[in-house]
Length: 147
Length: 147
DNA sequence: ATTACTGCAAAGGATTTGCATGTGA
DNA sequence: TCACATGCAAATCCTTTGCAGTAAT
Image (cartoon, rainbow over all chains, first blue to last red; front, side, top):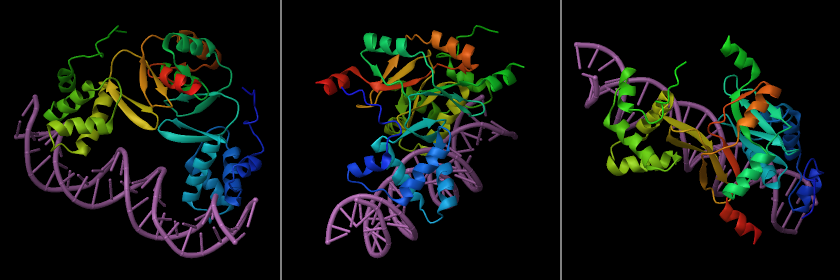
C-alpha cells in the first residue's frame, strides 16, 4: 500500500544492481539515448544515437537492453502506429496520435477518472489508463482536410 | 452528407463488384472465417479456419485479402497486445484488453463524448474513438490478484 | 477477352537466439 | 572469481513481392 513515486526517475544504477544485474557502459548509453528523445523514441532512433557515440554496440544488445529496462519498469514500450515507441517511465500521460501526419502529442492532463470508474462499476474491468494511444487528427491536418 | 449506415454489414459482393473488383471463393472463405470469430481474430486463426476448408489457399492470398477488405472498409484491423486483430466492420465499439489473461472484451456502450469534446476544444485534436484498445485487468484476474 | 486474382517461391525486414568471449560486482 | 552481458552470426518469424498461370466479369 505504499504511496511510492520513486519509480519515476529513480536512481537507476542502484535499482539495477539491487536486483543482481549489472550497470554497463552499453546500458548507460542506451538509456541516455532514450532520455535524449522527447517522449516516444523508436528503436532506430535509439540505435542511431547509440552508434554515434559507440559504433561497436550491436543491435542485439540494444534489443536486449530495451527488454531489460522494460521489465525493470525503467521505460515504457507502446505500440503507436504500427511501430514500437520507447520512453522513460515518468508521470502517466497519453498520446494523441495523428493518423494523417503521424505526429504524436503528449496529453498530460486528462479527464479519464469518470471513465475509469464507470468501467470498474459496470464491467468489473480495472482500466490502466496510463499510456493510452488515442487515434485521430491533429489540428493542422484537421484544417488541411476541412479546407 | 448522406446519413448512410450501410457500411455496417452491407451486401459485400455488390460492394466489391461495384468498384471493379472480383468476388472469389478465396475471398468468401476468408471473410467467412472472420465472421466466425467473435470480435477480433488473429491472422493465424483466420488462416487455420480457411485451411480447414480449402487447404490449397495460400498465406499470401490471405494477407492480400485482409488488406483488400480493410481498404474497402469491410473489416477493421487493430493492434492489440502486439498482434493484429481483424474483425467485421460493425458498430463502433472498444476493447477491454486484459494484460493478465489476454482476454479481449467488447465494450459497446461508452462514455467518451465528453472526452472527445474536451480534446477538440482544448487541444484541437479530433479524436477518432471508434476502436480504442483499453488495457487493464479483467474482473477474473483482478480477483485472482487481490486474493 | 480482358485484367484482376491466385499460388508459388523467393525476398525482405525486424527481432531473437546460441555460443564463445569479455567484464562488472 | 564467476555469473551476467556483449558481439557476432545464424536462425527465425512475419509479411511482402514478382511472376506465370487461372478465373471472374
